[in-house]
Amino acid sequence: MRRTWSHRPRGGQSDLPSADDAAGWFSGRLPDGWFTGEPTVTVDREEILIVGTLPDLDGDYADDAARAAAESGRISRWREATRDERIEIARQAEHRYARKVAWGARQGSTEELFTTLSVPVMTRLRQPERLVLDTLVDAGVARSRSEALAWAVRLVGVHAEEWLGELREAMTKVDDLRAKGPEL
Image (tube, rainbow, N blue to C red):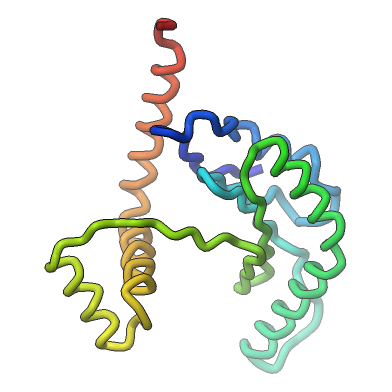
């Protein structure tokens, strides 16, 4: 099971249980045959997201739009067929990890996430940063400052993924060293 970086809680969130074993737990808990390979398990302070790949479609399609529609339909069918079992697995995981569980599926070039959280994040911005957000809103890139900020964060994530990965790795090493340190 592929696991993406997990943020370890700091500052007021220390009572949150560790989810370092979440990928392994889901690997053992998910039914065989749901996905063609190991799903991606992504963990943060509020949510655990499980996204797996469904078996490929058979048949020929007139164009990319028809294939995308078929992929979306297959994902919808999988979502409905697995709903009760996913709810039970999520309930168990939420009890174990004290985080909400969200699901997603991908097939071909189509990926859909369902029941994901949208968490408000408060930030203080000075006028130059607010002007950037307002420009994105005025240009129609975003409908609100909140949406513009989310867009900017996604853009940074895309362009800085390698650097962010190195930073996450370094933070994990710091957490490991901190855990090995002396008891106070």
